Image: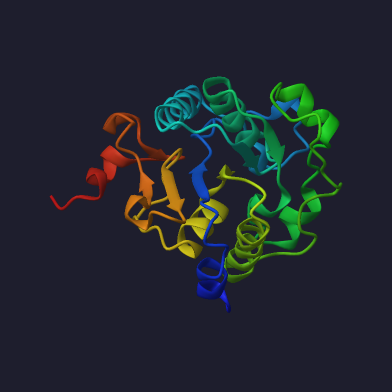
Length: 238
């Protein structure tokens, strides 16, 4: 656990309620088609599959049912931005590309091969990016990361949101590593960070908190990229 974790969560202003929703991107195209045919990009920049798009629409509809109207803070990877765009179409939200939610880079090779997209290029993919959004370039790490490094960068980002209290509610759109780290930092529970699973941290009503929920997605559509939940018995004992 990050040092100062509980202090940050407990020492917020008591008159401010904040809701932080968390989701992972939809399933990626398992044939690893590259965005705009750019074969120089690593597999890490794969686009959403048809199932992934359907999952993103479902989590968008669920967020709309929950009354979500806040900002969407998304990893600037293509698959997360595509997920955020489909959610935004359902909720009417604006998207803010957010560097600290990006995917983990586990090797020097993955860092050196990655090109990434500028904010201007991302605007060609997503129509719901805020006109006030800013994104430094390059926005990704320049060295390999491990689970602890990812947890720490995501934790710092969330701690900043809570400390600033600039927003009443936000949605974080990340990856298995970053969305999982966000769930763990906020102690939301759940076993698997499925594609488009949903978590909620409600600062004033912790009884409403939940983690890694996929109850709004039909069981046959629940996945973790190449792994389908039904193939592993949905985490249940046989």
